[in-house]
Length: 210
Length: 316
Ligand SMILES: Cc1cc2nc3c(=O)[nH]c(=O)nc-3n(C[C@H](O)[C@H](O)[C@H](O)COP(=O)(O)OP(=O)(O)OC[C@H]3O[C@@H](n4cnc5c(N)ncnc54)[C@H](O)[C@@H]3O)c2cc1C
Ligand code: SF4
Ligand code: FES
Ligand code: FES
Image (cartoon, rainbow over all chains, first blue to last red; front, side, top):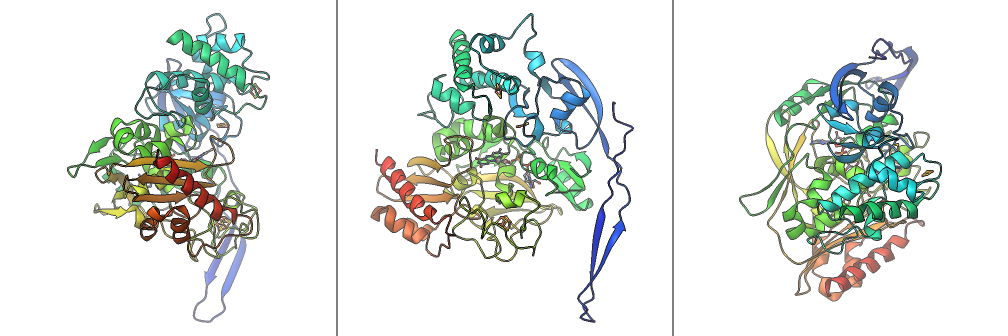
């Protein structure tokens, strides 16, 4: 794989403290001892992205997000915060939306991953992509791939009858009301504030579903 | 992130044994808390044992009439489970009030219980923090403490346990089932699961090193009206300032656990006897001995008012 021969070296300053209990000379600090370079650790993983199987050997630390962007060059999925707070990195794994920044690629052995590139293409848009264009569901577009992946999964969750924080009843099937859509999309932040148009795009697709 | 070796295990026994064999190992479930902290090098495991595929992903009835929730059941699946929605509505409600749809798809039952008790200074490696670096001091106590704990805290740490799910589990009298590296199993009532910080805030639970959570057990349902009221700075995707998880019965009795105020879900069974007397009497007993900071003293009134709102809702 792309970086299988790379080795990362880290020079760490170590602080070694030894307690001399008997003498009462409390601490002896030896600073500046150099740690041996730590080679990266590699591991293998196989999964499918947008229907195409991949076998990769990766630095164990590689997130699913970095794998998609840097190794598979699927740069539609975006990195916003890298800490699960913004939703820009949302992709579908076995049909469910997750934050790809808070997942190691190695956690996805045998999984089927769908990114924005797999939902539709410029000539054959996914209905949600078409609705985002029609309703101006974005301005700068940075959050948009994550919003669209999330939106597709949200409608599937509603169709499957999963309740949300704002559902009045836990037992009745939820409906795709504006309140429901807003609550369910709260993990996708939009710096440009395209929220109301995103909800409209989703409502249109939800209506066609019904 | 510091480098680590990685292994995927297939059974709980394999997981516990792998942990015993490898110093500095950590279990990885959903990864939404552990990886977040590893990126900041606040957690630096030398070895990761991925328990994601150990098969503990089922929710089953117990012979006693309760539920056995596998440690790896996702927060989404638990909130959505038919029996949980019908008989343990408080648990569904608490889960659905936490994090985001994406995070709940990844977060697991055990991982949620074991997410770190934390505060913003814990994340900022330039700040003093007794939890991150024992003995270094606590920047939060004299700092920005508006969100932090008011009871069960210590001079060493005032962080809160952020889980919504755990608040519901505490009110439901859940128990945590585990397996140790030597193969022995035990169950720990949630009431005895979280330690208070005292002088050792880096120790958060009564689990032993390398002990794996296999399931959470719920006793048979107790009926009643189930309410989870979470008060936060925005109406979705934010941690609780205060949350109240309640199961209220028609005769005025009930159970209440409170989140956002302490290093563990805060429940005082003796205070519950005062519920028929109203929110004021109950809260006074619940929060007896509270030591808020100037910035978070508002939580005393916020708990009382939220309890009052919940008791009122329970009447309708
Ligand atoms: C932006 C953001 C917002 C959030 N908002 C909320 C919120 O509002 N409310 C809320 O409650 N939570 C919230 N969370 C926290 C989230 O719920 C937790 O991160 C999640 O539940 C952790 O579960 P996990 O499976 O991903 O744990 P992991 O990160 O995999 O593990 C957490 C810890 O548990 C240990 N562990 C995991 N499984 C086991 C096991 N079986 N046995 C022993 N040890 C184990 C791991 O070693 C690790 O130390 C939020 C998180 C983020 C990133
Ligand atoms: S409150 Fe606890 S976690 Fe926060 S800085 Fe103080 S010691 Fe650290
Ligand atoms: S980049 Fe993953 S949530 Fe922000
Ligand atoms: S369109 Fe710019 S961040 Fe959402």
